[in-house]
Length: 308
Image (cartoon, rainbow, N blue to C red; front, side):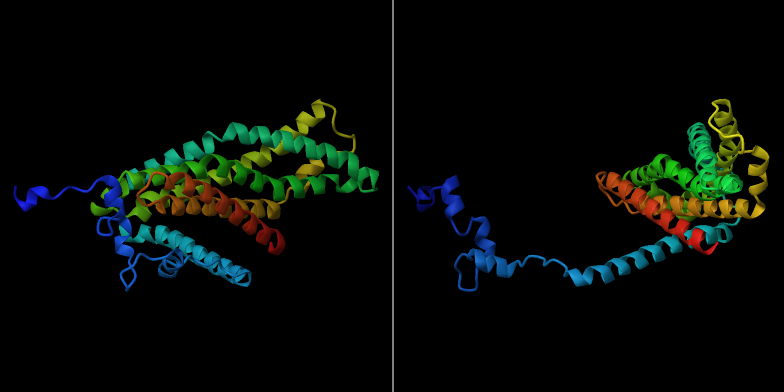
C-alpha cells in the first residue's frame, strides 16, 4: 500500500482544530500563535462614538451639505430646460399631467373636507372667545390670519407629504433598483429633465391649486357650515371676513404654497435617486424623505412668517 493511501482526510472536528484549515488561520499574530481576544480587538478596533461636543457641528455640517445637494438638484433640473431645448416635450407634458392628477385631483376631496371642518371650528372659536375679551371687531381679522395665512398652506403641505412625497420616493427608488434609470442614462436621457423637472413643476402647481381650494372651502364652506349648524355668534359677518382677505395675504399664501411644492418634490426626488441597489433601501429613503420634507417645510414656513 502506497503512502498516499495511508493519508486520512481530516474530520469536521479535526478540520476546525487544524490551524491551516481553521478560519482563524488568517488571523495569526507575527509569532504564529492564534490571537487572543485582546489582540483581535487591537487588529480590528471598534469605531468610537462621536463625542457629545462634536455632534452639533457635525449635524450643522451634514445639514449644509444636504441643502447644497438639494439646491444643486433643483438648479440642474431647471437649467436642463435650456440644455434639452425641445426634446420630448410631449413626454414631459404627459408626466406633468400624470403627477398633477395623482397629487392634486386625488387629494382634492380630503383637502376640501379638512378645510370646511377647520374653517368652521376656528370661526366658531373666534366669534365666541374674542368678544368675551372685548375684541369683537377683530374676530374676522384673526380668522383670516390664522386659517388662510398660517394654517392653510401648512395643512395642504402635510396632506401632500403624507400622500405624494412617499409615493414619489418609492416610484423613483424602484426605478433605480430595477435598472430603469440606468438604462435611460445609457440611452442619453437627461434624468434631471425627464425625471425631476416634471415632478417639481407638477408639485408647485398642485400645492398652489390645493391651497387656493382650501382657502375657498374654508372661507365659504366653513362659514356656511358653521352658520347652518348655528355655531356662530351674530357679530361674525361674512362680508367683514372677505374684506380682511387682502391681496397681500393672498400673495403670502401663494409664496408659501410654491415654496412647499419645490421643497416636497425636490426632497422626494433626491431620496428616490439616493437608492442604490437594494430594495430594502426604498422604505428607508421613503421615511427619510418624509421627515426631511416636513422639517424643511416647517423651517421655510417659519422664515416666511417672520420676515414676510
